[in-house]
Image 1 (tube, rainbow, N blue to C red):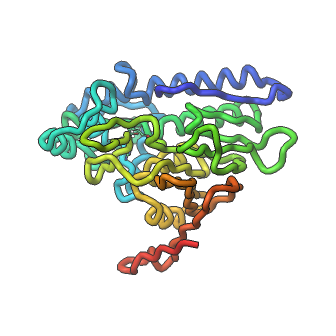
Image 2: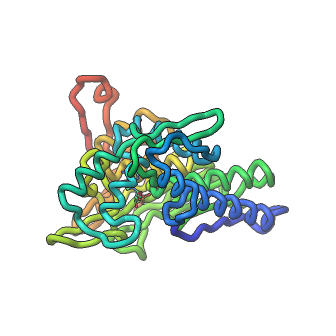
Length: 329
Ligand code: AMP
Ligand code: MG
């Protein structure tokens, strides 16, 4: 999945080393299922078989695709793993990063969307219904792998305390750090100066993920283009520096950090209101001191120089036809 994973288990816990190795083995197994960077991965084989009917799939791929389909529905298409054709024309899967011409973009959009994917349960199958449709688990796979690895630590090894991360941008905290109450202490980096944190928060049996366009961007036509795409328009999402999401699982945090990056604060606040245990910290491009905007269910300590705004959506804004109300305090 294109990053380094770490599993930290307190050495005082019996079976710590063996448990951590088993957790990492599960992550390696899932990399062979979910990575689009491996030509021999299960997802690469499913993509190559697009348009050829249902193909057998592992339970892991069916599980992550089912979760992804639910999140596509809930985010109105802002999160969509069936946007691999779009990621390819923007050069996100290797090759040249470029702004695609109109014809290529239109063709890629015709091949984008979960409506092109069918999941079968018994036996597990996946069907991509047009040649050229591609799945890309880049925005959810790391989180899913961390959840599975944490489950192995907990259920097979009886380990109730561990911190797991993929590339530091996806995290799962199992229990609490020994000797500390309230969970593992995690810092949220300032995207404008990565030696600093804008916030610290405690995680306990929760996932966290950050999506940011501060590293993976290219410049063309006097603009910076990031790697997070809006599958509804075909263009990279803009306006946010970074968004960090806390959720009950690392897979949801991973997917929602990407979705919230696309949706922006008001729609993210609406989504967070409908889900318990989901909250997010946005940092905005201001040029001056960092401004963070907080949505949903989230408690954190913010650095003294950071300006904090809470974005709330009233329940009325969720009613069909109601005016959206965006309240900042
Ligand atoms: P993340 O860094 O977790 O936000 O994931 C970004 C990666 O997921 C990109 O490199 C693409 O491969 C893929 N991706 C980009 N935009 C989306 C989107 N809106 N929904 C799902 N996957 C996406
Ligand atoms: Mg993500």
